Amino acid sequence: MDVLKRNNVRLHGTGPKSMVFAHGFGCDQNMWRFVEPAFRRQFRTVLFDHVGAGRSDLAAYDSAKYAALDGYADDLIEIGNAVELSGAVFVGHSVSAMIGVLASVKVPEMFDSLVLVGPSPRYIDDAGYVGGFSEADVEGLLSSLADNHMGWSAAMAP
Image (cartoon, rainbow, N blue to C red):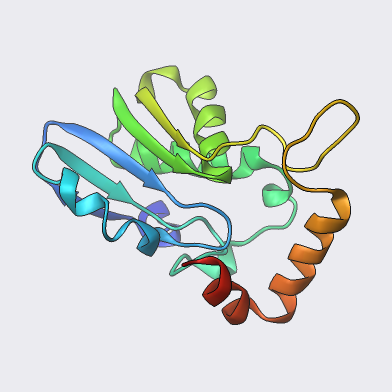
């Protein structure tokens, strides 16, 4: 499958350096619609949807592959290879911040800079670590999302 179609990749801008925008959980590339255009004169901008979000190819979803963030990081690397990223700026929101970190560890030359917006190395609290949610909170969030995705998005996106 063509990675650019699978992840609904959109390229804009004319700059000599690339800037990649990666959305967080429950969002899609549309979340960057007021931010990304401001960078088009200085950068070639890259927008995409993670598999399972937005206008990605939903048939490409593989529960085994995407059970860990490494599956998404591998997709990001495939996108980077397809659009020839080298020394790019990565801007990742929420869980995508961590996906960008994983991708940059695997392929260090792909990104010169990482801009991490609201990152967390772990989203479930544990003994000695507070990441923002109890396990029950996460289960409730996922249940709410499964029951009413549009309602959840409308409530969370603003």
